[in-house]
Structure formats: structure tokens, C-alpha cells
Amino acid sequence: MAKDNLQVLNALDLAKTQWYHFTAIIIAGMGFFTDAYDLFCISLVTKLLGRIYYHVDGAEKPGTLPPNVAAAVNGVAFCGTLAGQLFFGWLGDKMGRKRVYGMTLMVMVICSVGSGLSFGHSPKSVMATLCFFRFWLGFGIGGDYPLSATIMSEYANKKTRGAFIAAVFAMQGFGILAGGIFAIIISSAFKSRFDAPAYEVDANASTVPQADYVWRIIVIVGAIPAALTYYWRMKMPETARYTALVAKNAKQAASDMSKVLQVDIEAEPQKVEQLTQQTGNGFGLFSREFLRRHGLHLLGTTTTWFLLDIAFYSQNLFQKDIFSAIGWIPSAKTMNAIEEVYRIARAQTLIALCSTVPGYWFTVVFIDKIGRFAIQLMGFFFMTVFMFALAIPYNHWTHKDNRIGFVVMYSLTFFFANFGPNATTFVVPAEIFPARLRSTCHGISAASGKLGAIVGAFGFLYLAQNKDKAKADAGYPAGIGVKNALLLLGGVNFLGIVFTFLVPESNGKSLEEMSRENEDENGQVVELEPPHNGTVPVY
Image (tube, rainbow, N blue to C red; front, side, top):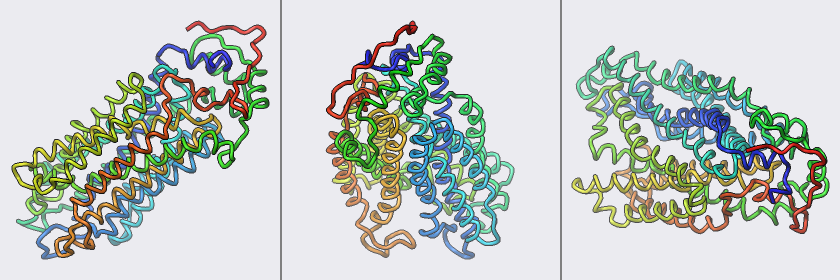
């Protein structure tokens, strides 16, 4: 297949790993670092928001966000992300990856700052302003998913492409870690400067006025890495695959990649003309030909990402129980407002350090050795096993002596999510679809995942409530209980195993081989005319 491909694409596929690969990982990865920081930092400060804006005089416990407000503050960014994945994914195929890439960063910078400056004369207006900016922040974040994955896949060589795309995604782990560490630093600084008694000692004095600055600073800082990355994103050339195969500008593609790879590459405009005119590659997303060639693939990438994110974002179900069980977060009334931020940040940082970050980087190391399919299947399998192991003897785990075992099982579940489908569902859609639909299809797959995240984070939060309404969390209706919710999640992970069989293995294959862009309507490889006097690159 390689011999029939454009020389510029062969040069990219066969290039040795070099500095520009790492530059691309850092530039694309810093976007994901920012995405994770912005999406997850809100969970560090929601308790603080409740204390500041929903304090009730004389109440036994500190103020908390009402269920509908908590769902809006935490979930509105997911809704924005879903919309952004669809919109910017489509736009990336229409306008080019590079042009749209800068737009997403600017949206993220503006909305991070706007979130931190949320204003209003009442709690309701402050939360409404925060939700407005969080939605558009999510919209910008959503664009980063299809564009970062597509750009990295189109820049990478085929030997280490999986590791490069996974490394971009793995920057999420560092973003979550950075959010926790920064929150620890800020809360420690404010705690030492503005000391306050615990809530049970003096309810009003436990939340100092300066606490309002804490959450705003944590949220605003998310704009900094995005702003720093903007210049370098604008300096990146458009990917050769978009320029040659979609924009049909062979000369520009060869010129751009000659500079990047530091070799001479012939433009071969006649080959581009043949690829676009002689092959059956003009079909659109809603055509029968797309359905025939890639319909099952798209079904596989959307369903596996949807099912994975239901389980992945359901971790909120038992995170608070785990933190309390091992003494990381004591009862809220025994702390002041800033102390609570510090404790939550410390707990989430430790979870990220011990479980989240290692899982991502295990994928980076092994994805090109054992393949995407094997890692995804293994991840879903172990997630299923550990979910059922948590659910079936759930009463056993609730005893104080057994709670450390519960924490270990919990950590392993999410280690195998990250060393498994959480990474591979991001990688594969960037490899198996045609260049002119690649960003769109990745956006559709990612949006399906975000829909699963909304189901996991909020649907299961209601489902997991105690069957006895009197024992359910304040403001929530009765649910099916944590044990039944965990059994249901085990079933969701098992379905992930089943739908993984719809996803093809792309390890070691070129993007054109996977997307079948060199084939005609009958599935035959089109023989392209050889270059008349080309310069062959030296690798």
C-alpha cells in the first residue's frame, strides 16, 4: 500500500521519531492539560461554593449547593463539551485543523477568566453567571478532543502513532494533578494568612470573606496554560494529510513537510488529482458508501466511548465514601471552609498520582506493542471484574476493617480504565476514518462519550441514592442503592467488551490503509502513476 501513496504521506509514515514529534505532543498535549484542569477543578471548589453562597444560620452542617444547582455547576461544562466536539469536529474538516485549533484555545482562555470573575448580587445570579461561562468553556474544550487527536495522528509515523496520540491524551492526568496541587498551594496560603475556627465552633466565622477569592483564583488560573500554548499552535503548519487529501494542495503539503522533516519531498500534484478523481472517495458522512465502509466502525467507536464514560464518570458515587473511610476528609463541620478545600484537593491529588496518571502512561508504553484492541478489551474486562467484585459483596466492603480493600479495588478499576478504554477510545477514531471526515467522526465519537459522562455523573448520582428516601442525600429522591448501581455499572462494562469487537485494529498500519482512501468503489487499490523525476527522502 505504501508504494501507491503520496510521497509526502510515505515520508510521514516512515519518518524516524524526531524533535518535531515531541513538539507536536507538547503543543497538543498542553491543550489537554488545560482541558483536564478546567473540567476537574470545579469539583475542588463546589463544597466551598455551598458554604459561601448557601449558608443557613443555625444549621447543624455547613451550607451545600442544592442538587439542581450542583448538577448545573458540575454538568454544564459537559453539555458545552458535547456541543463543542460536534461543532469543532465538523469545522476541522471544513476549514482545516490549524485554523480551528487556535479558536478553541481563545474560547477556553476567555471563559476561564469569565468563570473566575462570575458576578451577581445574589447566590442565584453568581451561579447563573458561572454556569454561562462554564458552558462556553466546555464548548472550547470540546473542540480540543477531535482536533488534537486528528493533528497528532496525521503528524505521527505509523510505528509509534498510537503512543504519540495516547501521550497527548495522557496530559489529562497531569492537568488533574496540577489542579489538585495548585488548589493545595492556594488553600494553604489562605489558611495560614486567614485562620478561622471549625464550623462546629463558630459557624459564621468558619468561612472568612477572603474564601471567595480562593475558588476564583483556582478557576482563573486555567487560562494561563491555554494562553501560553496559543502562539505555538499558530506556528504549526497545517497537517499534510489535510492539505493534500482535503484541500488538494500537493505543493503546499510537500513544502510544509519538507521543512518539518528536513528532507526534499516532491509535490506530486498528478497523484493528488488521481486520488480525488479516480477513486470512489467522494462519499459523505450520510452516504450508503460511508455506511458500508465505516458504519460499523463508527458504531463501535461511539458505543465503546459512551459505555466507558458512564463507568468512568460514575466514580463520584463512592469517592466521598472512600475519602471519608481512610480519613482523608473528615466530617465537614469539623473543618473551616478553606481547610475543606485543602483536604479535598489533597485527596484528589493522591488519587491522580496513584491511579490516574500511571494508567495513562502504561497505555503510552504498551499501545504500539500489544495494540489498541487488546488494551481496550483487557481494560473493559478488568473494569467489569472489579465492579462486580465491589458490588456483589458490597456489605462486606462497608465494614470499617475492610475499607482499605475497597480503596484498592476502586483504584484498580480506574487504573484499568486509563490503561484501557479511556485512552484507546480517544486514539482509534483518529486513525480509522478518511481524512476529509476524520475530525468529524472523532467529534461524534467523543460527543457520544460525553453523553455517557453526563449519564454516569448525574444519572447514577440519583440512581445510587438509598432506597429509603429518608436516608437519601438531602434534596434527592430515593434510588436503587449503591450496590445495585455498581451491579448495573458492571453490566455496562461488559457491554463495552462486546462492542469492542466492532473496532478494527490499526496498530502498525498507515492512516490511508485503515481508511481505505486508496481504494475504488469495488475495494480495489488504485495504481497511481509514479513520479517522473521525484526526489526520494532519506530517513
